[in-house]
Length: 467
Image (tube, rainbow, N blue to C red):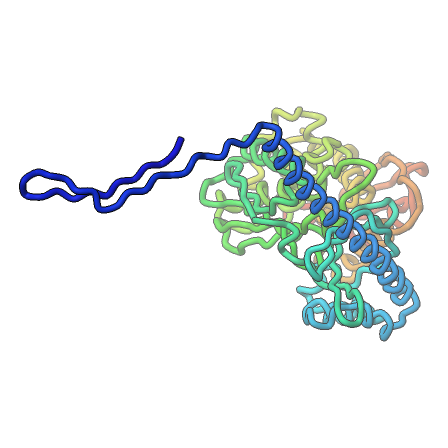
């Protein structure tokens, strides 16, 4: 098709006069094979350019990987040798916060230099040998995934290219991409897009925990739990719960991105500790918000036991609550927590739910208290263990705290089951004689003494109990 163009003007008499005209030339008709050749040439140029760029990028990555691996090896070696000067030479001095942290990290007395807030984070974590698993160049910065530790985990590190070579620098938010949030009832979870594939199991477990806890313990809508996965360095040593002091306030649970704490290579992360803290936060806030008071020692001990039992479904981890579940079943938990809201006496709580009396079933009663104390020691439930100790004798109380700590780090094996041979009550004092197979010095001796404080029978010093 050709183009024709005429420019005409009209007179008053209705005549038209052509002022200019243009006639397009004939259109050139290209044969189909010419178009095909042109398309192939353009595609070839594009493909050639792509492969050239890819080759150049691969060469740059290979060179960067070799150089950064040398820096990684030098970092770990300098840290192990305590060579502060050489270690700091590998750090990015332009990243001021990062550099200050590394200067603190290399100090031999690093833990003693931490503030209370710093002690929550891994400021003094060792620099481990690592091998590069993958590397992504982003201008003058490399996003490096490394494999380190035993068992092996995958972490991300960042290195910046400077005139003096590659330097280890702080985390860069661009790696994690945009932040997003997911809401489950009273729980909001904030995380970044890069974390999403890794934290899917956590989202599922927290969602289930929120549902189960609020079915067991009424959760007022005035209180919420905000779970935040941070990308700040250094990472949190463990989940950190920032709890509002007001009974009807809200809580924030801080976790660190799995890319900073380490992604297990052999099996998916179970997020048991994170689920424990979310469960504890929801359960404790549910009680505080409805009573309008902080948790008393009994409530604190039982809520902690509940969180441990919920995550593992193991009654051995809950010395008080586990016995109640074994006797009354899981379905009784709603009523258990309903009574716990207004209860501060272990004696009354145990007597009601375990149907045992300190006046009529003396041997069984003290056997139960000693069994709870033993299980608390084995399971590591400090709050439960201290709930049973005579806290009006500071030196005895401190001694029992030390015994608890010593057991947690010792390798003494499991303690024997408790068997009471005889219990004798005289006024506000009681002595309990154990079978020889129950004795486990220094935790339980042949004769154990108790003193009544208000409603409670508390384990006390032999010096006081023998009076």
